[in-house]
Image (cartoon, rainbow, N blue to C red; front, side, top):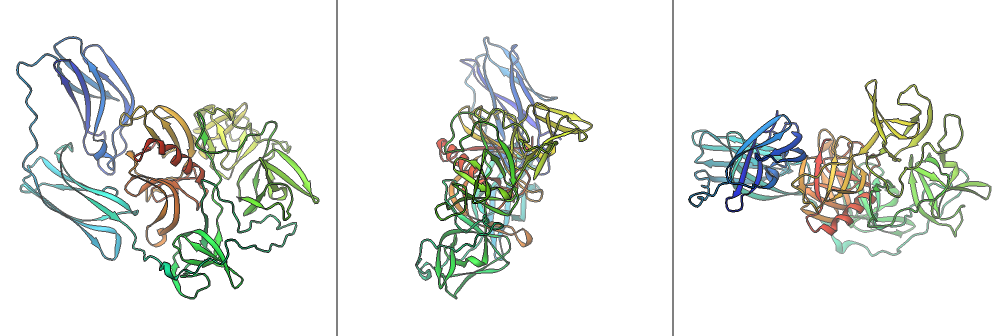
Length: 620
């Protein structure tokens, strides 16, 4: 059902300059997103095309309940009828461009209703819930009260006998800072006044560690003895090289309820880690020959109690101009492609395992690589996958053509230096490339997970959508996340930095006004914890912080989540270091990005100030 709307106009009778507004009624929580092509007929022969526009969702309604459409100056005095075309809907407003005989009276304010009670009370055994109590008097039968929890449910209260009262439990899915508001609306849901508002902090109670009990580190780094054999020579060690976008190493407890301790080598237990916990590693030390890690909570855990994580190496695509940080230098000439076949594979600056050639990075299972060169060392074959980046060839599966020849699965991104939209990424573990858009067509190659491709054409064949990514190269769109340009909403300024997040495609595009500058894969909320839709502005930017929430099987505890831009309550753009499942729903509502992509957006949007970027979350 379409959202109720009202077209209004403000006009200066001396200059005949008019400004048109569209007001939206508060939508229901289960309502679908109301989007349509919009145009404004000013009534004097001028038609203003406004492009596709969307009514606000229930979570974004308070900040977007009125849309400034356009300004227009009438050439002559007189009365005109303006008509707004919203898809098939029509809305009219009478415009009087003639000077009035007397000064216009100020509009009458809303009187009568009073907020007698507005209480938020915490629930002792549930830090993610609060009790709400509201009482409003002086209401008419055509007025309602709407309580917006700022990130949880919406509570509606109808008038009964001139007053409205309600007690309810507000459940929050995420920790964060929220603003609970009480609004007065008319019978159709249009805003009349804000009766009250109150800030609310939802936080998991965590006992801070006793910093005085922490033992000093006895060694900044511990050398580990590694036994090298042809089969295990390139399994990753515990060392890692910090990069600007990945300032921490991370680990996951090797078993449920693993314990941390107040000091390295101590027997004083600090905490037990529930399933769903992920740890950041601040530093490491050795005590009595055992390696210990200091966690993001400043306590310590034995290295044998955790498994080190290798975060995704996925990177988005810069669409125009230089980005904020370094990127891999493209190599000229023919390129082959391959995927990693072991759980973790070390990357070295030169071929060979030897003391003067340490590990400089790691790759995880199913990571895609480009193979620019091969070389032998001590009888073993090595592949160069970038500038001064070599891996042991035995753990790389080179993608094959249908004829069995080693060759590129498809041409590299056609416009590698100046890519354009639309473009996509392979979200399946691997994906066949076919000569025609049909499952019976010949296989001409295979693309690895996270491979970026140009999208040159879309065809629907026998009810299945196909994408052409090169000459005689087609892939099914079901396994491709496609970034397509989205029109800038009117609520976002012409020079503002903003990020458009497409829930259908699981992609994000960063814009400077109307100019797209960066595209990336994302992972948004699961069906049970969906990402909020609407237009928002960042309210808090933070380099890193702990995140926690959920309960039971849905519990999560994440230390030092980096490059975070909170845009609505506890919902944020941020790094996800614990998975490489971008392109599919995965989160508790936030917009997950790879470490590099989150860092890119965080650095780029900082130019726009503390409230940057604006975030527009939409379905398609």
